[in-house]
Image (cartoon, rainbow, N blue to C red; front, top):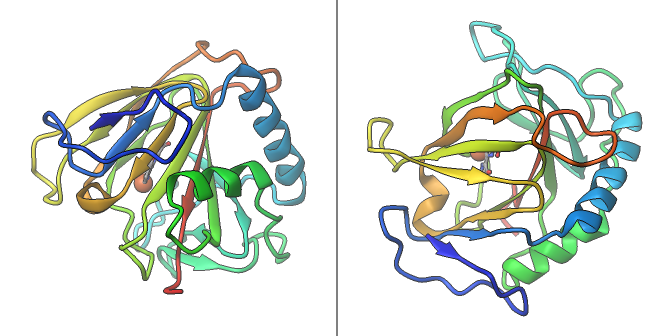
Length: 219
Ligand code: MD6
Ligand code: FE
């Protein structure tokens, strides 16, 4: 994994030590003020597109994470339709709110060659929420990275390999951190083991919010 402490330009890929190539962590890319400003942008959008609780395909089991989206496409899941991208909110039927400009700027910085993302998935974690190991696999274009921003409480992120049983390692994600999964890391299993409740310092954010930017359709 590359740990990028220099925010002057796009992250430079390098050989990782035990973590997949193409995984880049930019600790504190958003400072406290920028993280708080980004959260305010998200709260405005959550009023128009309220968080919903997705359910697993087939079983209908609810996720412990609540979700919403910004952008022209949003990730949704329910028992009958499964994992997919939709242009409208499943409950309101309205189009998703626009992507915050700060997130488009982030994408241009870390993925300057990539077409702009259509989707920003907003994941909201309460104290006991977790997200099981998964691969982001509902996009047409695996050639583009997934870029994530963490806000609020710290969380233990787990990442393995392309195989479900590959060995895993954990990485602490803190408020303001940016994590990029490109290259080989794009197809690696990952999830959230645990939220460290009460560690966040953003006004009006209890728990953790994670934003994942994805290019969904082939350009
Ligand atoms: C989370 N993140 O941090 C969950 N996926 O709450 C993800 O599932 C994720 O952080 C793809 C790329 C980066 C991520
Ligand atoms: Fe993911």
